[in-house]
Image 1 (spheres, rainbow, N blue to C red):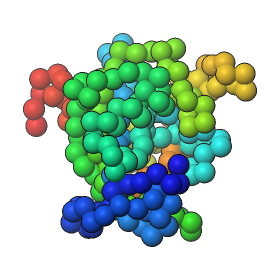
Image 2 (image 1 turned 90 degrees about the vertical axis):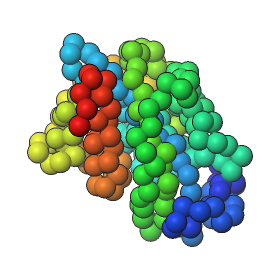
Image 3 (image 1 turned 60 degrees about the horizontal axis):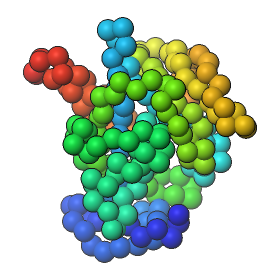
Image 4 (image 1 turned 135 degrees about the vertical axis):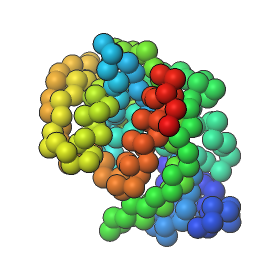
Length: 214
């Protein structure tokens, strides 16, 4: 995975060459990623699906994250990003069914990594249920659903914890379905600017779906 070749960009989002994934994160090159957030309507309430990152992941293990996301290789277009959805969740989605929220640039820095992403962010309206997800164990340990408005309030620090329902894979590959409370510390620490843009974009998309325009 560290030897994957990615296209690198300058701060004006102009392509300037290629580099390995290891070099991209070591030197902090800007690169493209694909993010897809699943939303659903249940009993009149807007729900959001999150993935639980595998405990064996190098970065942010055991934290809740975007429904499906990944790097775009230099040989791939943004449309090819749908492979991440199928690989991580087992759900096949057509690119035409995704709604673009925008390209969100952001940086995440750790002692051993500088992650400068140009994230192509999409939302997908799904009717799938928890049992429809078949996750990739080396990448994803489970799937959880939460009320979108609760998620927004949690990120805005209006509330300290929220309930979620989902499953974690057992060591035998079975789904252990349960409810639990999560706090902000249970989420991958994407920058506040990223989460704010995602919350705004999803909210606008939901309003559009109801025929309400702002």
